[in-house]
Amino acid sequence: MLVYWSIFAIISIVSLVPLKTKERQLFCVLTGILLIFLAGSRAAITADYDTYLAKYNAFKAGDVDEGIEFSYKLICDFVAETVDHFNGVLIIYAFLTIVPITYALIVETKASLLVFPYFYSYYFFLHPMTQIREAVAAAMLLVSLQFVKEKKLLLFLITIAVGSFFHVSLMLFLPFYYILNRVKLTLKTACICFIICLGISQIHLLNLVLGYDLSNDSYIIAKLYAHKSTIEAGFGERTAGVYILMIYAKILFNFFLRYKQKIIGKNNDYFQIFLNLHFFGCLSYLILSDLHIVAGRVSELLCIVEIFLVPYLVYIFKPRIAGKILILCICLFQLVISLYVVILSGPYQVGF
Image: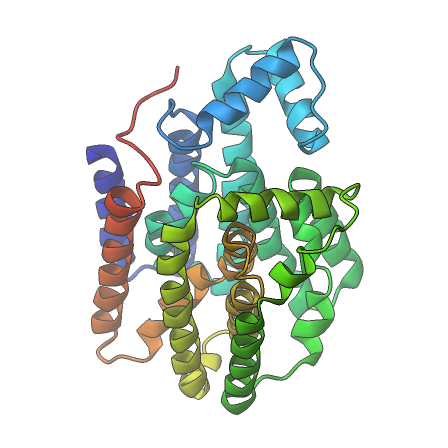
């Protein structure tokens, strides 16, 4: 674990140093390069590693797997014909994830260095280190927010199409081009929406619908049934109980930022978009809570904007260094949970 903590210490210390814009951008690029090699050079230390390795070997052997996006097969075939090593696949996916995130960070947050400690403390281990396909989709979602803000529909659609090529779940984000541009959420309306969705979650509507014999010819319906049987078998219920508490905490945090939005909003043009998307991400978990695994994946995809939101705490506290220290304490706590409680990754090992 020393490798993880050393990197966290470096990016945290640098985030406390007052740097000019160009210097911050340079550090963002250097940190991105470091994280690409860290995620791409790993051995079997994360939960999904063996699954992706097995699919890579299956594709090398000429097998066909229709249960995964075609992009994964293309990348596997390319790596098999060139370096012929599974870490080549991991490096490509890490590159396709970290580069867009770094770009979005520089463009949408003016290269806020506090983003990296927060991203690293959880989403780095969840996405580019584990869920490598969804990681690319989440990264492209962040990039697409630039085009939501600028109201460039064609570029938004192209970005979503590219991300969906790596994980089809990003198609769920299509309606948010209009939702984020047209739906105005105040603290009062957000509270009302939360209460309504909380009521819907108690009806167990999704579980009721899946109780009927629906046609499972659809890929999505089949996946829902698969997750339903998984939950009914007992898998995931422990984490579901913990996760709902995290969602409530995130909603309270969202309400707090709304209360302080006059102070924060003047410091970044994207604040309202980040805030609303984060809120909808939390609500998605409540509505889909019958299927914890599905709810978790959807909410994690939308809530990734919290890597941009949490650093806004720096504008609330004075002196500003106090806000920075608070943010880093949150990151420290989250990293402990990621490495020692949820155990998203084992001790680092090189895969080459």
